[in-house]
Every structure is written in C-alpha cells, then in structure tokens.
Amino acid sequence: MDKNEIEVDIKVPNQTRYLSLIGRIGEDLAKELDRYDGDRETLAYHINLVLTEAMVNAIKHANAGDPDKMVHVYINLSEHELVIRVYDDGQGFDISTIPPPDFDKLEDRGRGIFIIKSLMDSVRYDKINGGNVLEMCKTFRCPS
Image (cartoon, rainbow, N blue to C red; front, side, top):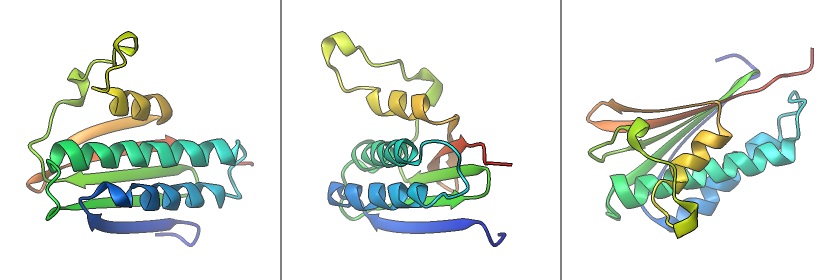
C-alpha cells in the first residue's frame, strides 16, 4: 500500500440500520479526493448509492435477513481507482443473468444491480472462500 492509498475494512451486523453509516463512509472518502478532477459531490453521491444498494442486496438476498450474519465491506482508494468489495455468505448468483428492471411496472427486482452497473466502470460477482464477493470499480482521471 502506498502513502496515497486509503483502505477501509468494515464488518457490520446484517441489519439495514447500518446502511447510512456505510454509505456516508464511502461518500466522505470520495469528498476527500483532492486529486480527483471531476465533480466530487456527484462521485460522493454515486459511491453512497452503490454501497447502499450492494449492502441491501447482501442483507436481504445473500444473508436472507439473518441478523446473526455479518456484512463485510472493503474499500480501497488509490490514486486512479476506487475498489469496493461487499462480501456475503449466500448461495450466489450469475450477475450477467439479472435483467434490467421493468420501470413501467415499478418493480424492484434487479434495480440495485442496474444502478451499480450504471454508475461503476466494472462490476463482478464471484464465489470466494465459501461465500461471494461483489466487486465494484471506479476509475478516475487525476490532474497531470
């Protein structure tokens, strides 16, 4: 890890009351990116949103709302990239098979993944160590 890198590793109980805490941590990190030459407020809002959506999916679907489980969130912020990983203990799914939500029917299914894919540069969901990890990456230009 170099001196300009920030790493945050958090585990919280599998409860929705921690959504705003985790979202705010991501938002605050993005606001501190003095080397980022884009709109930091918009980036901060987007990071809060993807973290919240990823956690909702982990809490409700992967961990099946079980309050005894934990949600593990890892954030790494380097000079040119933000990587967020949300780990879960669920059975997993194939992210490529999730269709976009049907906005005409105001249905919720697939909305979180759709938002995450729309706001991040790359999104993967893989099996890892008996569980799964949703990895979301955002690459940004920095002033030369």
